[in-house]
Image (cartoon, rainbow, N blue to C red):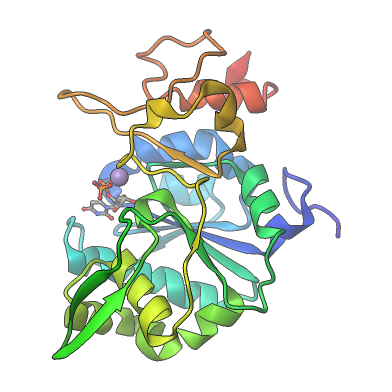
Amino acid sequence: AAAKHGVEDALLQDIFISVKTSEKFHGSRLKIIIDTWFDLVPEQTYFFSDATDEKLQERTKGHVINTGCGKEHTRTDLTCKMAAEYDMFVSSSEKWWCHFDDDNYVNVKQLNVLLKEFNPEENVYIGKPSMSRQISTLYSDENVKFSFATGGAGMCISRSLAMKMSPWCRRGSLLETSDKLRFPDDCTIGFVITNRLGVNLTHSPLFHSHLEPLSRIPSDDLKKQVTLSYQTSSSGSNIINFKHWKLFNSSFDPTRLYSFHCSRYPTTHFCT
Ligand code: UDP
Ligand code: MN
């Protein structure tokens, strides 16, 4: 197929990429995404936020969705956004749904390489669990166990599986499922897939959230990863240890992701 965007990998055109965000991060976290990997997959990627933003809407050609969800870091507000992501994927015609947080750097070429190994007509749920054991809890008054892929590291779901999730997820019902489970959105997705549907999570070591020490990924292995992340706070930060591309100082590039992106795509405008 002819490439409809920057990266000429046929499969990427079959992926619906949703990024959860919030108005308070439009100028900071979203700026990093828009400056870097967004331009490789601009037609595939949608931002699920909680406000309208004309400048961003123009820059992304209308790819910012104001979900109307609340603006807080609460289970309800975050699940409301994930439900909107799910619903938009279902009404799209893409073969894969990949969800990311707005503090993820997505190495889109590697995402393509990974998904090529799988068939979207089979039940595929892929990501990285943050816990080694299953979670045991109550769903209403039923004892249940489930596994889940950490939302903050990113995860992908095949169309075939996403369609089967619909009784617990479609048209906002993900929120009701999450209310009965009393766990966050990524856990609820994992519950629906691994418990209700009995489909296993395919573990990938290539997804990374800031729950893990990111500096432990060897510098030369960073390019093989599907996602990276960061946490920069005054009390200490968790960022990748990228040894190459020393052009940018840490005030311009505190996450090291501009540097990493430039090493992969050196012709990007800000790299020279
Ligand atoms: N987020 C949001 N509303 C909020 C806070 C966070 O939609 O009020 C989103 C944020 O944009 C990110 C995800 O939820 O995609 C996780 O938030 P964050 O990284 O701040 O927290 P974490 O759960 O990773 O500690
Ligand atoms: Mn985060």
